[in-house]
Length: 192
Image 1 (cartoon, rainbow, N blue to C red):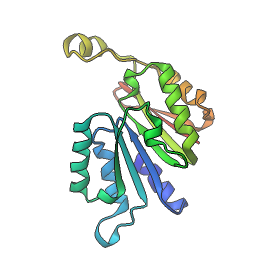
Image 2: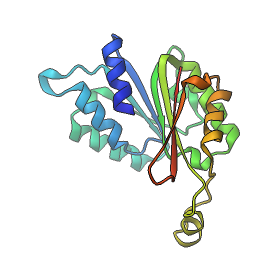
Image 3: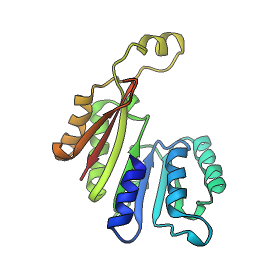
């Protein structure tokens, strides 16, 4: 979905494309797409600018190592911040074209999700996209918490997830849910 959005933006818009990954980890998938689309060597255009936000120093270090490996150092910025510290990664005048939030909403209460989506939508360009996911109610819940020892998560249905986008001001016609094949996660794309 990220690659398709980037292809569309690159074809139909000039200038830089600003991408934000919140609770980014190393975000290998996103970085590989940026590397492929921005090009290497003399073919490099660096139109896609990626900002990686994470509170974890080790995750950001892993991302920095990957950036070097993929040859996209000039196109990526790392920001150490919590998801709630918008001023650190959404400065005045910053226009966002694509935001990715995968793995964070599983641990956030609904009001914090709504607040974050509202803040991001306010900076989103016309035609820009926010992609987010959340774990769905499933039979693995007891195993992951009682046997594996993962912290408690917020399990949400697709309807609840689309409701977050609508409360943030997205038109319901521009909100799409993708259920991954095993039904463990729902992915939402909300387009402005």
